[in-house]
Image (tube, rainbow, N blue to C red):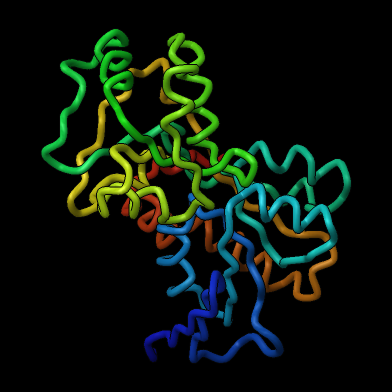
Length: 255
């Protein structure tokens, strides 16, 4: 089998697999940035041609609501609550794929960390930060929203909000920390693990939260057979390995 050829056009990754079996245009999937580490591995193994459009989940949700169509979408599970009643996504097709901690925080390796894993230590450490990079909640950013809720609960929102650096999402949060432009980055926890030069902060359990990623077939897809084939692949062993390798927890599937 030939290796996949990959062409990147902005936020779109086009994976062309040299294998017969599906004709016509490449199937099109929309994928939230949070699931990208796993999907980039999955798309390289899936066997019709597939175009994957990566964006913040709220951006993909808005595009779907405005009429743009994909064959399959991968979003936070809660996003499907607004899509299924309108018939945009086939309700009986939606499956849970993976879960991760909603709130992850990281700093440059060697920078100060909380003294211990208690809520008090976490609060004191946050108050000592000079700047925090997180995805603009107006764009999306489940981690950013969780962070804002957490500082409200800790009673330090007014002190911290003036130190926030809002970004468009994707890799921008981490890049600001590694470049020294921000002291801490807020992101889904698995997106911070294993990044060179970063140390992940231990967030108290009561503030972590959970986000579940799910996939569904978009109504009216012109190639339902290919869409169903991808959904089956997403529940298979290759996808399971990709999910675990990306640092997420695989969701249990009904038998």
